[in-house]
Length: 300
Image (tube, rainbow, N blue to C red; front, side, top):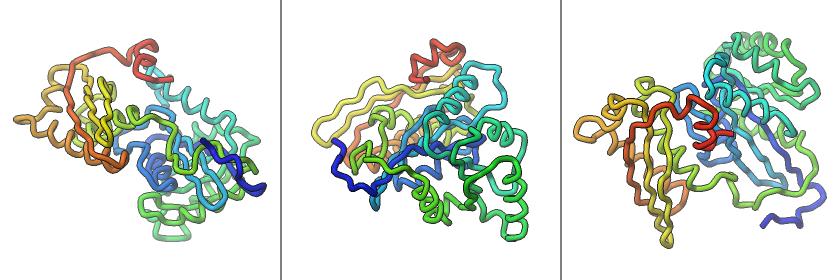
């Protein structure tokens, strides 16, 4: 139950985090809220859903919306669905964080700029700013990107290192509207534990298999039971071919065992209790080839 007794100076609002793939949007949100609710990897299209991360502190509630990286190739249903998620997330938010990678501003970034509402409060977040050691180069880069849109503020950060995240949070707080909190003080996401469990397994799949596995692989939780503090979770990794299945299982099951172990440890940390986890690999091709298949696995 939310606390409706917040004072008249309480600030609360929705903040969309947008940008091309692999600029560090999910890492940024996780660092801002102080918990890992959005998965990360170097593989493009890691974030496929609209993920909400919540931080409540010092008379303010920040409701972050992590979005998929905007896809410049629209030829398949999954890319179209991901892009629709991005554009929908820009509606009815109070602040937009446009995240770019320091020193890089290509056509994919420019396409995201075209999506930014002209009258919105948009903060330019230059992530991985530690890559540009020369402050003159960083300033020149910031001026180059700033010329493409009327940004409310520009903040260089390093999400991974936590550099200047306090400054970014201060800028966000300044533009949050005066509102009562929407979520409870202890909430960190509006997603269910079942959803988070599937995302954690999917992250480990991409981490351990990487570019060898096609993007049309996903994870479903077939059973999620809780007995006191113990959670029993039964997950299936869906792949398109028998060769992909063998790749995930690894020699004598070593790779699947490592995926399971690392997934279980992350779940126990996030859920705050013991987890019994079993994972199978199943061949199921074509799930992402049409919108019906995408909806069956939770894509909006």
